[in-house]
Amino acid sequence: QSVLTQPPSVSGAPGQRVTISCTGSSSNIGAGYDVHWYQQLPGTAPKLLIYGNSNRPSGVPDRFSGSKSGTSASLAITGLQAEDEADYYCQSYDSSPPVVFGGGTKLTVL
Amino acid sequence: QVQLQESGPGLVKPSQTLSLTCTVSGGSISSGSYYWSWIRQPAGKGLEWIGRIYTSGSTNYNPSLKSRVTISVDTSKNQFSLKLSSVTAADTAVYYCARGSSYGDYGYWGQGTLVTVSS
View 1 (cartoon, rainbow over the protein chains, first blue to last red):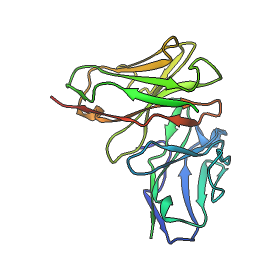
View 2: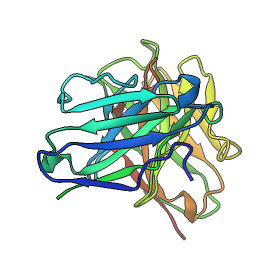
View 3: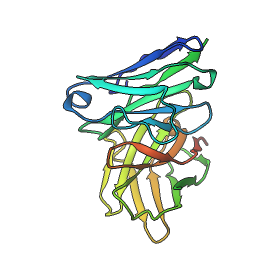
View 4: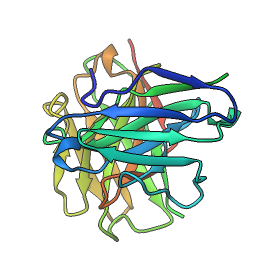
């Protein structure tokens, strides 16, 4: 059972907007710690998608955006494309262990 | 461009010690305010943080694995390593090495290496 809770799956049609939630607690996200998001394509290593709640690394399309409020964070993907089909993970800081991940969300593009 | 590459045996017998090395290229492991981590992922499951090391030698481990884990760094070889003792089938996973930043995110990952625990 992961410290950060994500929905197991979400889906959307091409061109649509989907959001993935990441729910934590007062010891991690609610304590003000940053949330980061990763995209993992099948058979590959995770790739940093969003860091520091809402910042995109160079090369990440602006279709991906992140936000944080209270004890939760969200990843939004607009203009859904077939290539976005992947697993998505959130990550934050906690007391012990200091690095915690969400359980992951599988995005299916219909 | 920083690159990380895991290496080590792909098959380990139960009760033995799993040993992996991560070689960092494209930059010095000692430069910048970074830390170096091991993260694993059992087949079909999520990511599990194992631990991290700063080039000062300071370490933090996941409490669930702490009694069995040692992470070390060799700055002369630009490498850091993982040892996990007394392995069981539950330790079978893809093991990733990654670089953590001052933000706490992992911007660089190795490609991952599958370690199977089986007799």
